[in-house]
Image (cartoon, rainbow, N blue to C red; front, side, top):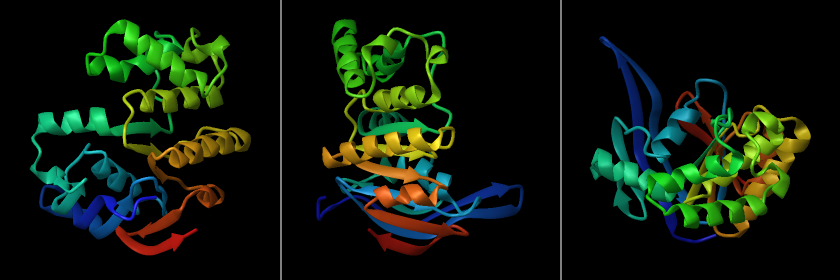
Length: 229
């Protein structure tokens, strides 16, 4: 793990407005996230976990405060620059997998590379290589609906890795999995972290935080505790 922060959140606020009503989801969050770190974010429903993850992934902008990635302020990037940032720097893993059932497993993994214009032959070779580290070859040309939920989440992880991102953001990635498959996913994340990826995971499962290097506890949009493992 690097001593230099990869991501810095500086007094970050996110306030949602409905008419004249203001609802703060994050209240002055400051946090450093390091390259090669596995960080887990926990907290009760409504504590701001997913809001924080969306800001880290440049899916949303803070109302106040600043987010730096490799010392570059995301606040200052245009919508097109943010889209490029997401495609190249961030891999997303979701609770519901978000796979396309009309495509095969390998075609699903190719999607992020298609967005960047990677030639078909190269993206197929890369997709097969990534899948080969996570799944048996027999599932590569099946459709997601034809494989188990644990296998589907591993496909989603493979897709998140397609463009070799610096950061994997995982929002309740084990929420639809049984205990055995949840631990398989955690071991994959640990391996990725050992290979230099930065993992930020939102989870409600306290047991799985044992895989993380640090645990950040949120409550009412604020960091109330940081636990180093």
